[in-house]
Length: 242
Image 1: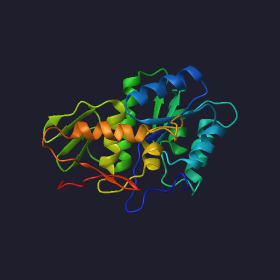
Image 2: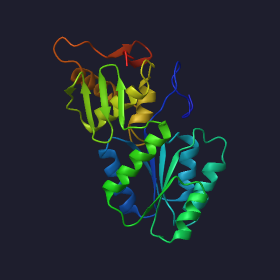
Image 3: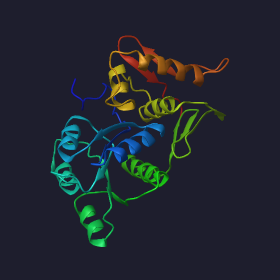
Image 4: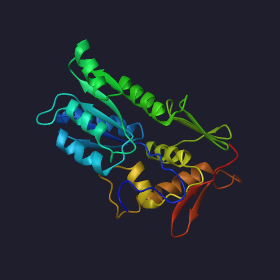
């Protein structure tokens, strides 16, 4: 299976980000912050590495430094936008210290969706990422609803039938991915690819363990199980009535 293949029987919409910046401290700080928000995050330190990763992985959004040695951010953005094999196209949030109007216009003309000037506060970056992801999915709000499950991506609050769920960042991200694909059988490989990141060990049982803890938190007392194990294939979230 190639990295662009999804599970049989439905359209996969993952939440995986790529952070590209020539400053090692900045790229790691941004990646750590976004992982705490529950996203799967990969990193690249230059344009060539970024293009290689975009060619192999269907990212939802790329946080892209404008000024890099070799292939700069504008050229990376142009190549992403002109490559028919990059499908679906990721949203691009340009990060740069250049704050002139001409620079912002040039970046947007190259295909960037938004522009954030350095230095920036992380909460603003996170808010722009959420906004771009909502635009990408066509959603008008930050709330996902599947049956009796409600998930507010902006406030990081998940509820079942009004009961708030105490979820870790990874459990929240996993539930968000299930809710983006209700009724679709998702293999462990697919979940590892879209909810975790490039540093996840494919030979561990991390997917099985996290699905198990999420399943227990979703069901309390006599509540029904919402995540079904499909033997030999993976897991499926009940589509519900919503």
